[in-house]
Image 1 (tube, rainbow, N blue to C red):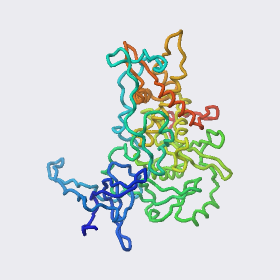
Image 2: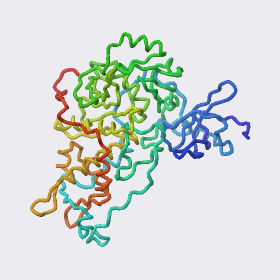
Image 3: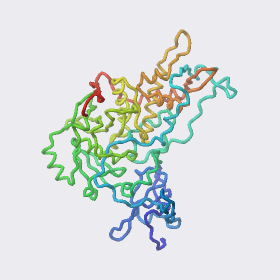
Image 4: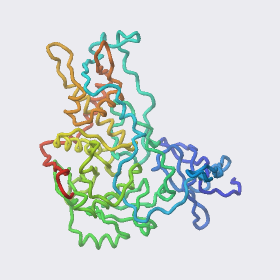
Length: 484
């Protein structure tokens, strides 16, 4: 039974949805839009404290009208010049800039403070011990022995359907390393101030080669294409077309069977292509439009000139099929080696996300630099990076050998130089794993048996390591070039 009241944009009320265990739940949701179709109304809802990729159109039967909350009235607030002003309680409906398109720019790091914790200078030396081999070396509560590493709080959660990926992918979320952030929540900054149109998915379905993809977020494709039931993309040049007939006609003329640019890596069926955003502007912009369907935490624009794109492909008899990509600035003053990173949904949870991350650090090694991804990362990206950092650092620690009977020693600087992972990320990972401790004037890394066993299980899952011998890459000094 529904009361005869108008549910308007900005209203909040519980909405019925299926959770990951396929059980009914009634989370609080905000009405972002209302539309009428013959015979009924539909409501576009955003579930409060859930990731935007779960937003959807729902029927009136799924609304709990008994707990309907109307938007608060506008509260008058003073403006800079002292005159009264008003601030709406729900986002204003503004028409977005018609041709705003995409490429990653600098963003706030307030939601990624875990990586910015630097409790000690990065030149500290740590000694390594295995607490299951040397139980007397643990710290106790009185400071003479170390207590065992506590279990990380929070149970592991299944992912929403079709939501693995990194922006990156998270197939190793249960690899013995502390569990992932809440997969149904959003770790990125509050986007409620965004234009109401850009908060809603505008593409229903994308056909890319043999795959059909359901976008997670808004992407600024031309408005006339957003009303189509299916948007067709050429999987080799990424040109968007309005119908299957147009796509078939395009394929008779498109001579590409791989991304434009230079192939700089090939092993087995996996290849990487380096694409200059200035030389291949159209492809780069089309790639960004596609990526924006699955990335919500980046702002994207027309200008692709300052960026390089590294596209990972899988080869078969028909050509090189795009699996994922990452972009990076040609010149980064903050040592970013990744701006955006994405594994397309059909290829997620298969190890490709870690492969993209590992490849970005292999490029940094060739360049002789340490690198870090641009912040903030998405929830899935954070999960994949944490897992990669943990596995990479643990691999180094477990390979250390005793020196003249003494426990092995290594510095944070040495770990950073070996892995090309920035020192701040090394420190934050050691803190995240709860491995680093201070005892009698020195830092000690204590590896528990659970950590070691979990790491060994995780490494057995990684069947796609990057082979540096297959990389043919010569870095350019962009600072000395008059033009990109």
